[in-house]
Image 1 (cartoon, helix red, strand yellow):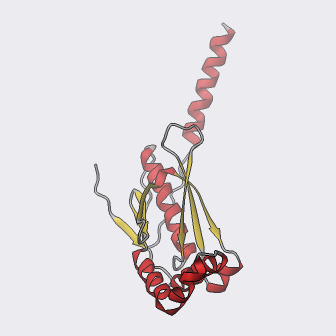
Image 2 (image 1 turned 30 degrees about the vertical axis):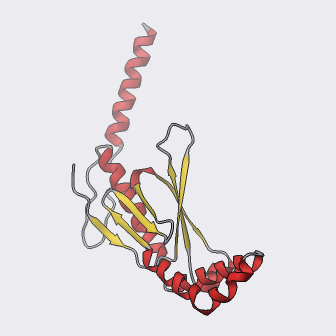
Image 3 (image 1 turned 90 degrees about the vertical axis):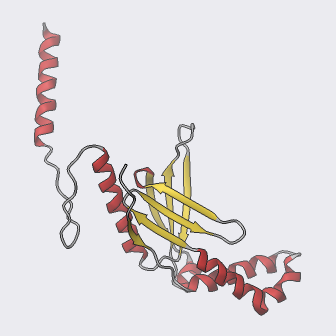
Length: 186
């Protein structure tokens, strides 16, 4: 097996701390029990916990996987093989846009027993999210090409996608179909 190499380490927007502070505050205000906690949250605990949570955020693209971790009490670490990623989408409602944040939602094909099992993961507040998404998709394509035996992608100063010549493959398929057709006529 080849060694895993980190290709990119994501950085996160510090506004994530403020966003988390206000989201939790909203839920505390809307719950009856939360009213007891609101003063503690506003006067110190909220800023401290939001900052601690922010420092647990980590995301890396490696040559094989996407690795993500977050959380204080419930620490979540996920490693997603790039070839299993089905969809990457951006979510940015009015509140996220106000804070200048983007949520990247990743859908993956499940490896369990279910026929249509899907897993989802969300990453909030990655700086330059569009570029990070592009890097994930480029590395995913490279992993899939290597898995199926296509030539490695050529990398110069910027990654260039090699166009695979399908003419020979189509000619071979055509010749096989002609042979099958002739065999069926006999």
